[in-house]
Image 1 (cartoon, helix red, strand yellow):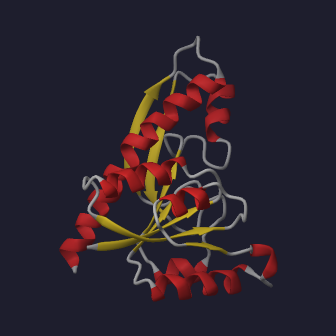
Image 2 (cartoon, rainbow, N blue to C red):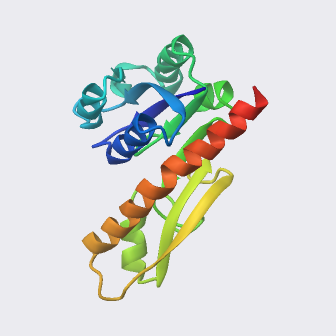
Image 3 (tube, rainbow, N blue to C red):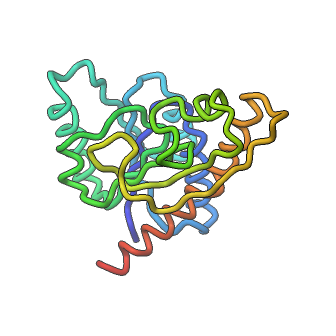
Amino acid sequence: MVNIAVFASGSGTNFETILQHIEDGSLPVQCQCLIVDKEQAYARTRAKQHQIEDYYFNPKSYPNKEAYEKDILKVLKDKNVDLIVLSGYMRFIGKVLLEAYPKAIINLHPAYLPEFPGAHSIQDAFEAGVSQTGVTVHYVDEGVDTGPIIRQERIPIDPNWNLETLEEHVHAMEYDLFWQVIKSVAEEMEGKK
């Protein structure tokens, strides 16, 4: 079975959905730990509720990204993590983790890439007045939301929606899409073992 580590920075709603699918047997992976970069991240509460170990690494207490990621890597290696799942993790992944996990770090992005990369993609799509946006799951590389795309889905935008309604629709699609992509990536990795 593929071992995953989930990285998050915030409330962890997608993390919760992933755990529910693991627990009901529809997502056959093992979640070894949660890694957070914010001490107050609500995702940590969710981890405790599901008996998942969580680790907080404060980026400000390290001299650079390399030192920060080396400490994270120790935990990942100790837990035999095969796949890193970025679920609302608001930091760029650096060289240390990219080299340790080639084509084994996936990210969920709330837009149809290459449209609206970056941190505020739902708002950016809304303000641009486009007729559709979407959700993308992609492998992580050294760029900003530029890695190879695994799967994308489109969401038509109703002109009567406000930003909150658009966010609800995007998040609903994320919850549905992300665990399925994790499953297919894990199955592919399992086949190569």
